[in-house]
Every structure is written in C-alpha cells, then in structure tokens.
Image (cartoon, rainbow, N blue to C red; front, side, top):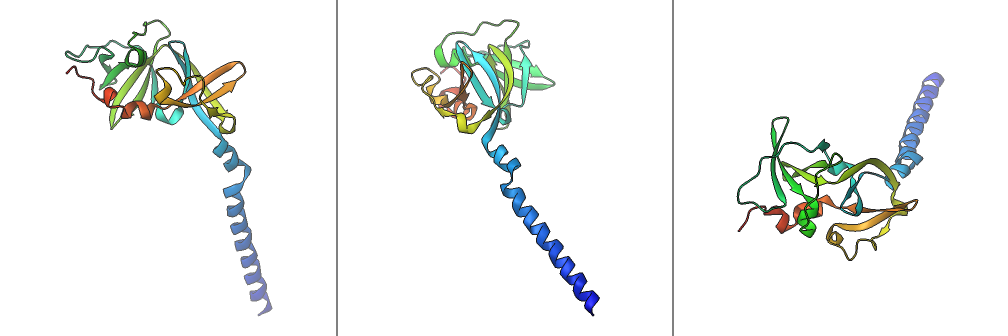
Length: 183
C-alpha cells in the first residue's frame, strides 16, 4: 500500500513540474523576446527608407515583363505573369506623389495580397531583412509631412538611419488604391 502511495506522490510531483514548466514557458525569455522583436523587409522608394512587416510580404521579385491594362490609372503599371498567376503591378511612388519610379537593375517588387489577389508594389531597392526591437520604435516625425504620412505612424532608428514602418494594409484599404481604373 505504501508503494502505491509513493507512486501517486511521484506522479503528482511530475504533474506539478509539468504545470510549472508550461507556466514558465508562457512568460519565459523566449516569449518576451518574441513580443519585443519585429521582423521586416527594409527598402527604399524615392528618398524614403521604409520597413514593412515580413508577414505582409509573400515574396520579393525582380522587375518582370508587364502587360499594360487599358483605361487604368497611370500608377497601375499592368499585369505580370508570376509562375502562372496574374499579378497587378503598382508603382508606389507614382501612386503617392505622381512621380514615376525609374526602373533600374535594383528595382524590385514586393508581392503582397489584396483580398485574396496577388498585388506587386514597385519599389526602388530592397536592402534585406532586419530584426528590430519594438521598444526602440517611436511615433513617426520624419514622415509626418510627406505623402507617406497615412501609411507610416512608427519609425525605428538604427545607427544614423531612420526607417519608417510602412503599413501596407493601410495602403490596400485606401479607396484610391482600390480603384485602378480611369473614371
């Protein structure tokens, strides 16, 4: 009888250790680090240095051949065939400022999703991926008086560079962006 009691006590102790372990994982260093780290794709469009959440970008593409769409806004450059999928290609700076982005060897497309449809945003250059601590972000002052103000509310400073956190979902929600046809 005593041996059964010892086994029950041992089992209860193991269950207690398991519960304590699970509780520790929820507030452990790994979760705290995950809560304060943010990953993004850093890029440049015009004179603006921006970062967009890595989860908002499905792919970074070289500039492909594009077929123009008749009767569309000039910033809607056309359609590209990306592995059998038709993708709308939009020039971000042209949409925001009316100034067309030059296409160079460094020009890239950020592929994202608009209500289940792939959309590619033309940008001037991609610098790569960066992991930032959200504790170091601040309300954007750099972009406050620019065409990017509705899409950049936070910014990060690393060294002597400031990166505006570009909200691609806010861009996709803009009625003007949603309507690429000429009226």
